[in-house]
Amino acid sequence: DIQMTQSPSSLSASVGDRVTITCQASQDISNYLNWYQQKPGKAPKLLNYDASTLETGVPSRFSGSGSGTEFTFTISSLQPEDIATYYCQQYDNLPVTFGPGTKVDIK
Amino acid sequence: EVQLLESGGGLVPPGGSLRLSCTASGFTFSIYAMTWVRQAPGKGLEWVSGINGIGDNTYYAESVKGRFTVSRDNSKNTLYLQMNSLRAEDAAVYYCAKDDYDGNPSRFSNWGQGTLVTVSS
Image (cartoon, rainbow over all chains, first blue to last red; front, top):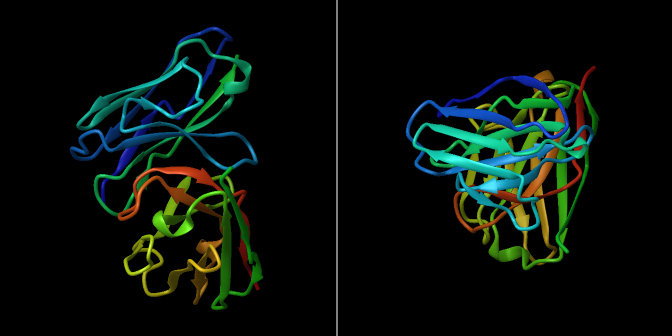
């Protein structure tokens, strides 16, 4: 199975800060990498797919990049409504696997 | 608007069985793969199982293979997950999700609200 790791596991930042989350795959997954946002008590929401494509309707302050084994997800200006846990997910190989998540909150 | 509504969760003793359902609306159900993802209390997301649009290809996580069976009834726009020989570690919120494609599980653009499965005597 492809192992996904994320760093940091949690972070605290101020409103307006630039926030970057890293996701690393245990082997080359090309660009088969998605990002989800999960708010407490809610279902996950797809934000970004194929490493760098923003899902329709998602604010442009969110962006993803990377390929191969290293990926980043950036919030260019953190907003209060962005408080959530963010997960990366690979679908290059079965089983689909998720990263352990990065919890983002406001300082 | 895509809507997914899970049902069938509840309390079941270890070794017991449960069948989850996911009723879909707002899209042509039969042309999309569907998936089950679970989340144990306070934990991350774990992909459980997937099925292609016509239901002739199924996929499972190793942790549930041989115990869980995914199926779909396209005439009823409903996805199922039959869970047998349940273990304490199967306790979780189970989400159904719509894939953006047919075929192997890929990206999950719509999710249900989840149904809670508790395994305890």
